[in-house]
View 1 (tube, one colour):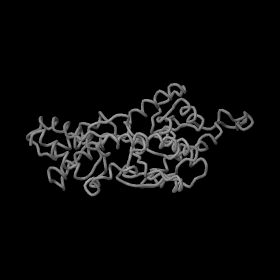
View 2 (cartoon, rainbow, N blue to C red):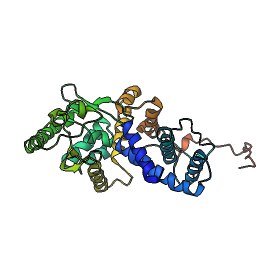
View 3 (spheres, rainbow, N blue to C red):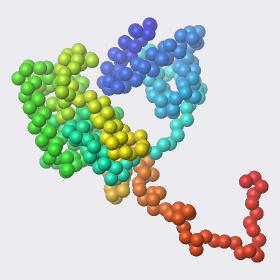
View 4 (cartoon, helix red, strand yellow):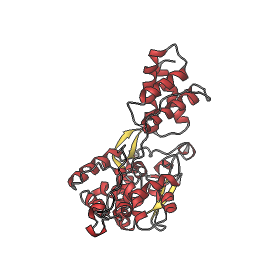
Length: 337
């Protein structure tokens, strides 16, 4: 197959599996890079070329990035080329150091939020107050917010999983006022006869008019319409994720926080602050939607009392320092030191 044909078959396979558009973009990028790399090694078997490609990535990218490329190639060989038992052989894995997530203090979170206004502030408050990922927040629909129960339902989250998280009490009133403004936009779309919004999977075929119904409307709709990348239909999509990312960056700069802070940092801070307040780690795991408790346990190292509760030797009074008597023999120092 040519490069164009290969990528087209890859897109079809990805959409058949109902993977996200972000995953599709990532897999297409790695497939294109692998195709260009393979041109120099046309005489070798495809599996061996894949192993050499991964080995070539090792010194140039992080461990997570190399693993991302591995997932893309595994999908390509299994779903497109039909080689379910493909063996890439021995290749050099890139180092995957265990890094701690960046976390804001509660005071820093409030300082950042105070620099934001409007819809972006409300979205940031939900990301922090409910532990949402950026795209979890952008893709929320009216029906996903349950004021009576005090919860937010996350549909088709990372890993195509649903979960329930808390709805912050302080965000309920501004969120209710925001929904009233969104209703005005929804009514204007219906009067103008615009196409209904995007529905996941086969719902659009099962319920052709559901996209025009209020419960399915975006909680954070875009101000303008855009073409659906799959069907080409011009409709209203949810707000673009970059709008919150840019606002967050400007707010962090205005708050004079000298660290690299992103929207996802609010989710890290949500988990850490819950653990600091005594919430059980298993409950935090469920709120975050983690599959394994080990993933949640990383936040234990970010809890304030983990390191701040220890007195540094530099701060210890002199009375606590043990000195050797002048007449006592001094301990021997290893020659290797």
